[in-house]
Amino acid sequence: MDADQMDYPAPARRRSWPLLVPFLLLVILAGGWCAFWFYAADKAQGIITDWRQREAKSGRVYGCAQENIGGFPFRIEVRCSDPRAEFRTTQPPLALRAADLLVALQIYQPNLLIAEFGGPLAMGDPGQPARFTANWSLGRASVRGTPRNPERVSITFDDPVLDRSDGAAPERAFTAKHAELHGRLASGTVRDKPVIDIALNLASAVAPALHPLAAQPFDADLDSQLVGLRNFDPKPWAQRFREIQQARGRIEVRALRVRQGDALAVAAGTLGLTDTGLLNGELQVTVAGLDKLLPALGADQLVRPESAAGQKLDSALNSLDRVIPGLGGLARQKAGLGVAAGAALIGQPAELDGKRAVRLPLRFVEGEMQLGPIKLGKVGPLF
Image (cartoon, rainbow, N blue to C red):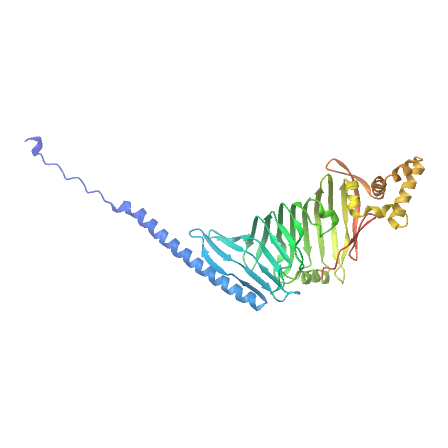
């Protein structure tokens, strides 16, 4: 039999369904994910609506000129154009209005909320021209936890600027290269005796309205804690400080570091509040480059013989004369030198970052601030 006439078995037909299974599974998963995303987006819209209604009953009204939900497939994004808020129960009432707000939630990380702000932000009385206007190049915030039980909040701004306007030309009140504010629940809950850790970071900040010393750029880092809050329900800060006073709470300054040019200061201590809302307490301050800071702190009062601080300084310089005749008189030849020498004698010698420094107490007595022998002014009541 010829080879061409030989019978060969027919080739087996290749089954194609195993190749289709992964594709079908992928289609099912994609369809399920799409359905889940749209369900989550609709749920988010319902949560926002319910939250606004609850807030409105408490006198806090929020709104947008236009609101859109997006972020498919892995995020839920809510974009609010021309966002505005009115706090009608505060005294005085406050109205806020910004240019844009974007809030995002990762579906695979639902306990982390991220927001971006678009400036400028106008602040003032409802229905009146803005009293303050803030702007920035980049503004962000993050909230970790749940809406009813937040655990940590962070707000950061690049190039923030704050202008104050009282019907005249705007006045620059604050600028910085970078600013950060962090809050963390250290113990308790937001509804029952929360203890709040607060951290602040400022880079190249200028705040002439705060104090003449702050008219030159400075960097600051603060680590503090608030003890004595009743809860963290929405309320004015004046009411929160009153709660701290009533609970005999405190403001713990665990670490404060401020640098301005060649001058550097660190501080730590505890502050309380009087029945009238004034600060009481003491911070231990270590200063390097004190002679550069004294003129801005009103050090000229130290060399006035009639002042109590001047009498302390004169006594200190007289002691120099008794040890080395003529040394006290030499220190008096220049007011700045006399002030620095007197302050060093009244304080304690120290070292800070390898520099000679002075350790002095910063006392608050009924709101009056005094750094060693130097009166700095008065802090107004916090409630």
